[in-house]
View 1 (cartoon, rainbow, N blue to C red):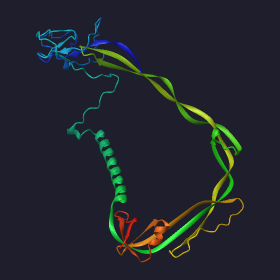
View 2 (view 1 turned 90 degrees about the vertical axis):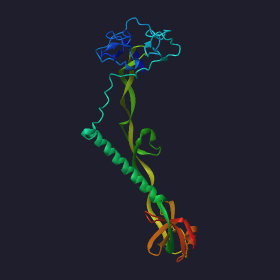
View 3 (view 1 turned 180 degrees about the vertical axis):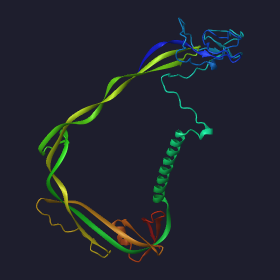
View 4 (view 1 turned 90 degrees about the horizontal axis):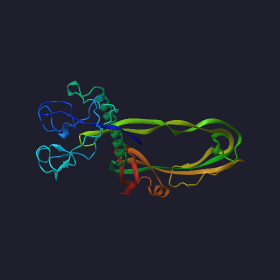
Length: 331
């Protein structure tokens, strides 16, 4: 960030005793109308266009507040100029927060008599409703997963499936950026396209900041930050043809009994084909508490131990009624 000093100006204050307004923070330590002491907590930044510059003013640090009469005194002072009390333990006055006149003013507080803020309130309510819906959905998902109850289940059947995919190599059309085109690609045709964007500096954005110095004055500082724009980055997008393995078919073997001879399907590969991925599933069917039906997937060893007609104690989901196979214990 680049900063630039614009100048130093006087803070203003209003006399709380006689009501005189816009007194100068540096020049008027006491009210010229009634003699009342300046309260440093009441200093404020002047409106734009009403600023009073400080000429040849040496900065000696923030004012110190007299512990006896609360009058602000120069940081160099040893005794209070108003009551004469020593300033050995006097604390620095409280400074106003930095002010950025270029910033938009804060929105007004909602008027309770008018329903609490109109559109702002409606937007707040809409956001609140969205949050409630999200929380409700998350709670439902958690309940479906973790809210379970004890139940008695009876095994009513079994099924198993073993599958092998058969892949075949063929010519496929694809596209990629030039640097990612495979080496064995053919019929390559490339053209210029926008590939991404990059940030480039386009100038700067400046804001004026007013900083309370704590001695009845403030500095006006211009703070400038660089601005950026998106600039397109171009590359070569290519279409090409290549040899690719794709799923031609899936061979399956299946059955409905623990007494089956469980085996993988026999493959008869044709020219240009190869064996692909293997998958296997083992499903046990139940009656829950003598009425509702359900099922669960498990491994082959566990599947074989759950005999038809056997009864087990287990956990089932309260929401979805799914059975936790790992929780089953024989009665």
